[in-house]
Image (cartoon, rainbow over all chains, first blue to last red; front, side):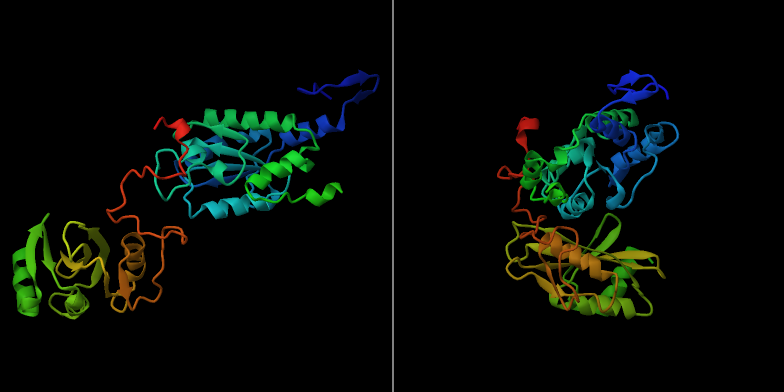
Length: 185
Length: 165
């Protein structure tokens, strides 16, 4: 076994110890399956990020999941109209815990140039966002930086967080129920 | 066929139904009263010589200062046979903006009429499904009407902290 990055370990003769929390978080952070929710030009930049030049698969993310049930990271790239907002929220609700959200570009983060009646002024009005990527559209390097920040969050998230009262409260702000709330009883 | 020969032919076919006519941006524009618009389009479509067989566009314009004829429905017709286009305008009052639907003549009118209803509130009588098409269904106004300002200062869905307004 080689060196384990960012992981506190105790090395002994023939064994290595760490906490389950950290081992699981490390595994999760290196296998974040993204669900691309791409609606416009940011989606094109995201496709470049996936492609061979920038290559998201270096980070264990080559498997784009086009079903919310089997994905960990919702990548919203592009303008979300108010008509589409309930669809996006439903997709988020259908994802299994633990789940993260990356908001790519000005439109997804704030409505961008579309300061108008038909466009949702930022997806954080309907779902909680973990990392925002600025830019109109952002370059693939910026999107990768956002993804690295997501990995950092995943790596340091305690396993109990998704069962906590704070998390339930957070989703309650968006009128979303925590799907695994019963599991901790 | 040129705009002049087309106008001559239309005057023979339609006579006094043509309220005004002019050539704008190389296209002949005629005004028809809204009660006759359907019949005129039907006649132009079925006429063997003119053969306006293609409905390019249905749209609308709002002229709030012209009392009694605030809303203008615009039809763009195209005759493939004669390779010429024609614009037909019909003016409606904002109190009761309704006009007969073209869906019995052109299936392509269906979504375009829904869009015109969505943005201008014009009712197309006889349309099979007169509902909004682009905006969210909960919307309770027709946003392209000019009484709504381009910048709405009363809006609360924009977070002004980031935009310095």
